[in-house]
Length: 213
Image (cartoon, rainbow, N blue to C red; front, side, top):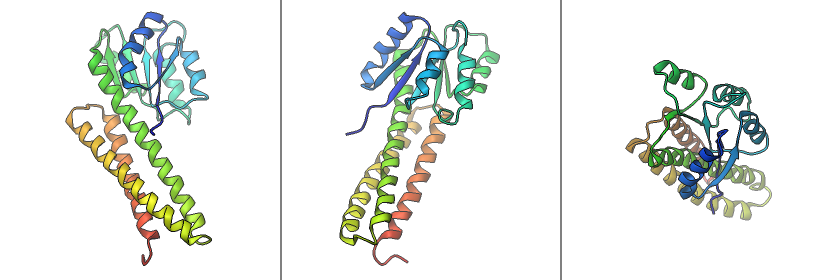
């Protein structure tokens, strides 16, 4: 069973957080609230998130400053950030959002279907990468046990092969989804990176097969 992804919702207005929860509840993932930039950074110290929805206009530490802190931390720098804002100051304001590390920038009021679709892409990417890490762990276990317990190693090899094939199929489906309508350059880059990792693991798996050179 695929583990639920965590989505961080950051907004100083409770009614906005409630609205986001209502929109994203259909994704059946774990939604975590933060009512300030400081609270968001605290949550990021201990939990892993698939994506962050970050309000721009907040008292104290605003969305831009919060994003800057997130991108400076090694643990959190690769988490996708979608900026949400009720104001629109033109291209310069939007560029500032992308410069702060956002993968997308949505003005309120936003289309719930569009927001849910964009978040869904990053949830899929996160879950595929999580599965990929599990395959890598199995591969490492295979390398450690193959010499001492060849029978068990062979069984693990077969299981690893089947699970890798499943992840490859999911990655291919994700790529088609991105090609069909996702417009985020960050999501496309992540998908390409995922596919490169899968190719490397497949080659390593083939090298472990009996008779491989």
